[in-house]
Image (cartoon, rainbow, N blue to C red; front, side, top):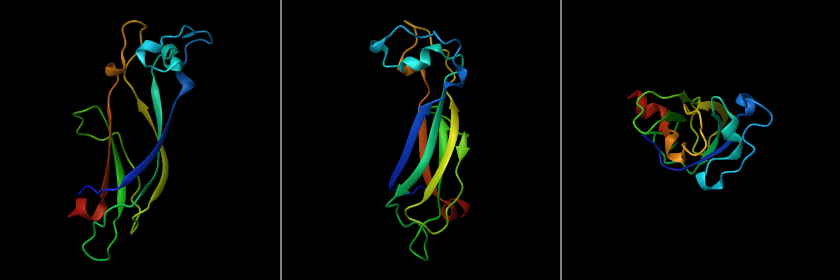
Length: 132
């Protein structure tokens, strides 16, 4: 089952997909989309799953958890994009794992809005609870 607590993540935009050096120079602050994204052919988010702390004790015996994180792209996604490694017996795990998340949208100025990009869902589970 899911484990309650706080998950720490960081993110950045992958610049590998910029078309040209001068693409996206015009600013469009009303859109809420970072300037770097406009020149990308396939915008991608680099997401680092750093750590969690104060996770709930999920194991029946031992008073700990064996947590891992599952990343889903899209509100209704059933298949995960990525799963971290399981960290045994730890309520304050550190993964420091990075995943590239394709955003699936080719931005067009004046057309693309933040709502056109998929949502991300991150869930923390206890390995023993999922396996049962």
